[in-house]
Length: 102
Image 1: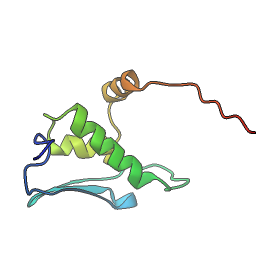
Image 2 (image 1 turned 90 degrees about the vertical axis):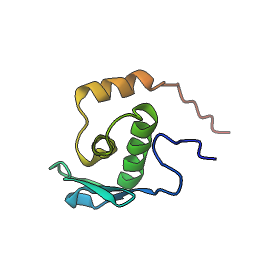
Image 3 (image 1 turned 60 degrees about the horizontal axis):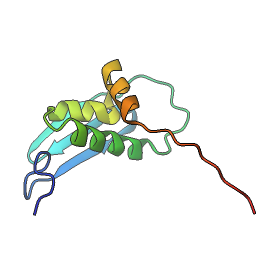
Image 4 (image 1 turned 90 degrees about the horizontal axis):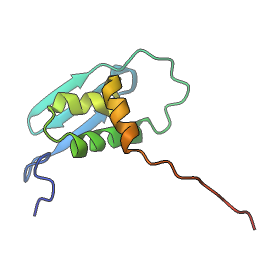
């Protein structure tokens, strides 16, 4: 049973491939979308792939009707616009963190 039919049809693969400064490619079946990376000074690339996958999943779940090129854009291949950032902030719940050392 496919629990998420709106973003992956049965037997169809959806793959996000990040390539650092060369951008990213999103593959769905036999179709591919490419996006250039924003021109920024990178201090540390640790976690960049995880962040991209997180952005892709967020876009797929919260904006299922969007085009795949928009999902790729939201995954970080290009900066999201302000409206997307504000929507993300609305859905983010901040909780205080306490850690007691014993």
